[in-house]
Length: 249
Image (cartoon, rainbow, N blue to C red; front, side, top):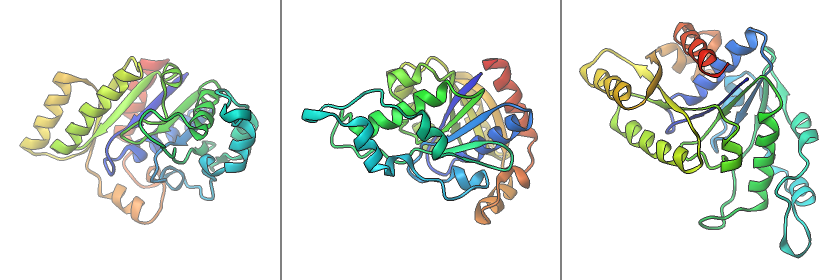
């Protein structure tokens, strides 16, 4: 069983990593579910599917399943049927879902949408061999109870100090919700002293899962809405996949 959450600042390549890992593991025969938890929805197109309904948009369903009289609501609503109904399976056999966004009413808000989406994640954690969560840098969808089912948080960074600043924020959030293990993937690597310093810093401070070289074909795939695994060099992703299997299986 492999249950991972992938996080990082916008544009660093976490969706590409999520899509390629989902593809490679499904190719090996694993039952794979990939869930887009980012407010900027990109994972479905990276996996070659469209028209995936964001679960947070099911206002009537959320009201029926979550809300109770006198302003109370259920913390563990029934969601297994919705998991099947609103997922799309791509041509490689990967099940794809989109969570959508949680509308926050204030600091510490635990709204019905949040209860509903976390119930979806709890169900997903126990459903298939492999679960890959494409998160925002904030990992807001993961509460303590949900995070306990995640084997590993993968933080994706690129050569640059803004990315490292986000990495430190992700590390703090991971500690807050009791994720036991975090590792780092360096993406868009190119030969330079600055990029080498970033990799050296990650090696010294974190568990380095892999380094992905800069690949112009990944930009081409994104611009043309082609799944990245169809045209990019998969060797670095294969190496990450094998390390991931060693860590989680």
